[in-house]
Length: 143
Image 1 (tube, rainbow, N blue to C red):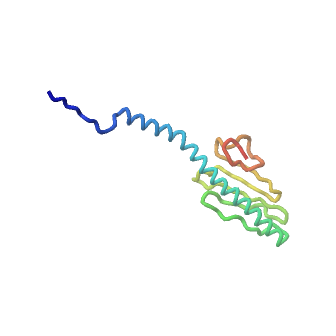
Image 2: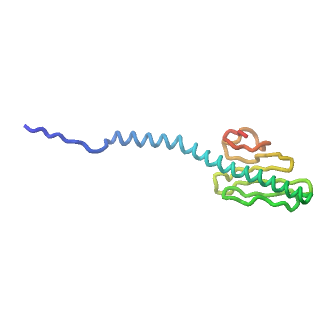
Image 3: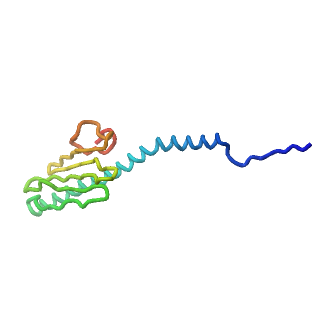
């Protein structure tokens, strides 16, 4: 009597379903964290450009004794910049998220007094009523 012993070369359906479930759980946990990481990186781009723009306008003021005519930071992939209220003694630089980007709801500003404001954020990012007198850089309204 010969016994036929069949060797199985593969995965059972149960093993495959466990792997799919583990990958699904990791995706559910990981994707929002990754998305927040991307948003924080783009916010850093905006706040850096606003700070740089402030330095450039202050240098312009030192040379010309007026803010009128000062240059605005150039637009980036994620934000456009608007210089408003450019007078002899005042200015405001605003960064607005580009439509269709992950930061489209974000809006930050800075003025001649170095007052930093957040006037718009994505849902879940603001921890208090807007506008806030700081730049919100993390979920929950952390400045």
